[in-house]
Image (cartoon, rainbow over all chains, first blue to last red; front, side, top):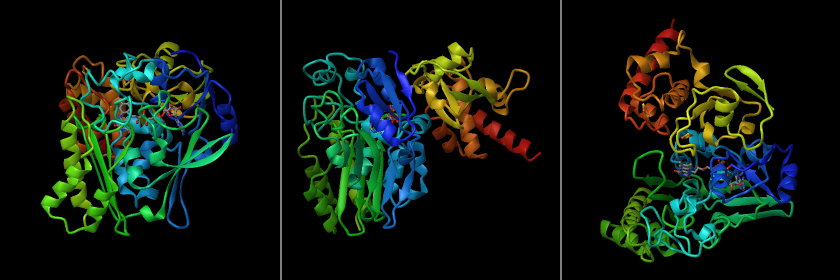
Length: 319
Length: 156
Ligand SMILES: Cc1cc2nc3c(=O)[nH]c(=O)nc-3n(C[C@H](O)[C@H](O)[C@H](O)COP(=O)(O)OP(=O)(O)OC[C@H]3O[C@@H](n4cnc5c(N)ncnc54)[C@H](O)[C@@H]3O)c2cc1C
Ligand code: FES
Ligand code: FES
């Protein structure tokens, strides 16, 4: 690994000022960033620690029942956080991340901002995201890759929490010395397949300070599942999060199928929300949800998995 | 920076990029913690950071400032082994032994959470520690045996 300095800031302002200087990058647990440095995707001269900054280290329940999760909170903590008991889909998604050690090491901000785990990218072979022109996975080994292509890169985003946050309509609070902005989780991953430097829209000096969950997303019916090859310590082939809010509206999202977390078409969600569905109509809805899938030669199996997951989600959250 | 290593305070100032694994093995001579994949994919480098299992190959030493690191060397010795180490021997739960230090450290964390874990809890708790020799069933038995021994010991 190339050399770099380690900066433990005394405050959030100190961290943002340090990150405004060229060559600085934020670090959470380091479980992904250190890989990126070794692989030559990132070359910081200084990393700036985030996890002990008070604004990033806490989970707060607001007076109205909404919850603010600091961007430096550990995944293992989130998996069991009592503050998240009204958001079981998020706790389940955090429990599904990697292994006990990866959950103890990783932070929420780092998990959302982690890079793709595509083997071409990681080994720097003919990869669009590593100085190449096309995506090596298209004509190569792509069983784990995306079935909804949205640009040159065909990697499927590895974050499980992001999928749960998508159905919870989470908002991401991003800060730099230039100011604060709020992003829908969907907007965080806009252009992920075409962005060489990152899968998120974050600039190098921007920090995920917090993730906000609205009170309206509490409770209702919530569903999570993650389909993997080896059952543990593995990325999702397909994951599925679903919620029926207490107001009756439905949201369904998938992981492992696109460059970022993927949301089902609104018309499908509306039809699930309208209720009274029999086996046949659920099947038709799931097929409609994946209608736009463009699988590669070797990963069409994911379309079937995605449909099966959506059918199960629809049944669990229906009425 | 200062960290606590196997119960003793240590003052160090390593370069920012130093991983905990390099620090333990190369700076401190604590070679009980093994380097397998060196990329957070096997678990053999597992140590405890404030009681939680972490892969030392992807943890910077600086992240451990003000915290407690525990390695297999801090657990027990040949003369006075920890009950988990005894149980691994009794159940013959190692073959080549390369994954064993990481398995045992992960098991310490499992038993700290639950003194009487189910097999499912043991398997989930050790799911980030791969054994290429395939000793997993024996490891589960060893953890169960250690749990029973530790409960007996703590009840006097
Ligand atoms: C073998 C393996 C299996 C895995 N399996 C899964 C899995 O099943 N599911 C899953 O979801 N993940 C999985 N992961 C990913 C793992 O969970 C991530 O490595 C981890 O969550 C990253 O968190 P971190 O805090 O260590 O991030 P870091 O490595 O510290 O940072 C990652 C990136 O985010 C940036 N960053 C960090 N914090 C912030 C912040 N607050 N704001 C803005 N940018 C920030 C860093 O600069 C860096 O670019 C796996 C990883 C490995 C190695
Ligand atoms: S050596 Fe650290 S996980 Fe394999
Ligand atoms: S005993 Fe050989 S790797 Fe586990």
